[in-house]
Amino acid sequence: MNKREDKLYIAKSKITGLLISYYFICKRKMWLFSHKISFELEHQNVQIGKQLHKNRYKRQKKDITIFDTINIDFIKKGEQIVLHEIKKSKKMEKAHKYQMYFYLDFLLKHGVEAKGEINYPILNQRISLKLTDEIRLELEEIYQGIRETVSGDLPRKRKKSYCKKCAYYEFCFCDEI
Image 1: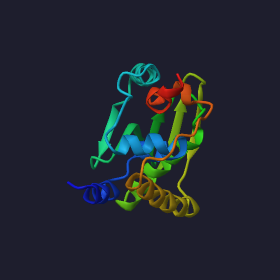
Image 2 (image 1 turned 135 degrees about the vertical axis):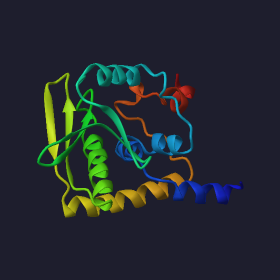
Image 3 (image 1 turned 180 degrees about the horizontal axis):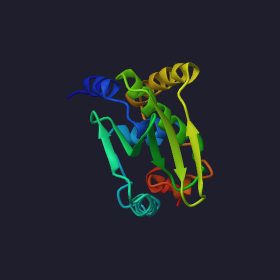
């Protein structure tokens, strides 16, 4: 596959909740992850999140994958379907919200209306979310922004306050260490 074909393939590949989250956290990380460059499997913060996910909400069936595109931490069914995501901290709250909005939008496009809830068990807090028409329009712009970013060149690094805790830190800033 030549460079042009590779970029077309990446631009057409599916958008996932993780890409939505990375769109708000770091475009460079999003680009790297979309190009199958991942440093997260063994990273300490990722492992802490996995343990939190594993040890909380034990009565719930977890990790529900839908259409091989979205992976919900757990779902509660009652009067209405409620999707739940478990998060460690509110530091990336906007990314968490839009990840959930993506899930809600994805399901709505497949005929399923649901609400979302982000659970912060360490903080003993939760945020309830509902998809609106305004947010759906924002999501369309975000989808386009993701496609443009991942099909382009690697975005330049921009040091942010949370970079040192990122699994990609050494990759991005190894020349400064």
